[in-house]
Length: 351
Figure 1 (tube, rainbow, N blue to C red):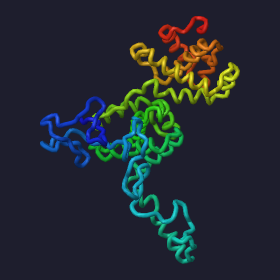
Figure 2 (figure 1 turned 45 degrees about the vertical axis):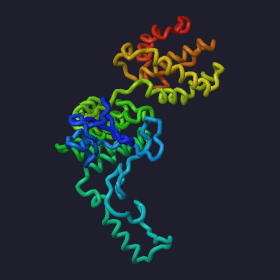
Figure 3 (figure 1 turned 90 degrees about the vertical axis):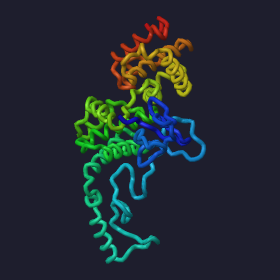
Figure 4 (figure 1 turned 45 degrees about the horizontal axis):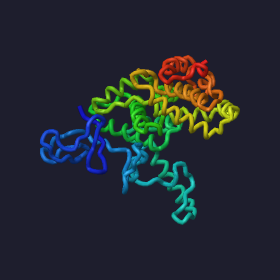
């Protein structure tokens, strides 16, 4: 089995379970060669090299979140199947100009229009039609989920990497893209707080037979190839999203103002209290509860705590929280019942 390895800028590299500084066999210095991490002394192959999604020049950033797009060769964009060479004008241009902005002659216009038609998508794609359709679906899904370009390009990179290194022919490119998208959003943590259910739903809306069980099964199968499986989200990864959903609700904002709160002051107080409550509840008590639903329930409990501390009436009700976050009321009630004894919410607030 191969390990998932990140190559760092200081000459070392790490994976999700251990830090390797030297060869485990001869303690020799490790180097990269043709996409692999190998020992420079004995030649032992340690693992495949999966390029980090960032490339930092100068001072190393403190943030652990990847924030740069992948670098690829000229004429080859990461998120689509490109041909070699330059394009003739823009994608749908039918009227051509020279380098100085002057219109070409009628005969030259006809010539370049014919050349542009010949150099069509079908010819440029060649034998990569399956990859083209998969990446086109990825672009559509990224827009529906409102993901930034870095997450999209990271997904495309992982997809192309797996396709190029897979011994067997990929039978379902769309499912593979869904798994790579799951890996990418988990890497970006709270910058891409998308749930597994949402990934499956948006692929189904695009007309593809992709469900949660199939994504999980494919991710586990790919672990034997990449040595990496998507990590389970932590509740704190969903805090920015839950706050955004609550504060963008008109009904919540109206109640915040009616309780005498300044919206920004309330948001900051709620954020701090949510993070505090999450630290108070150990993972053993939370068990296998859905982290997103759990974070929503913690937000509901946190609202009641800050209301008690400031001698105000609570802003959130279970119904209002459910409406703003699209989480079922009974789920919020169930999670809240578990945490209220641990957090010690006053009885008069609970009632």
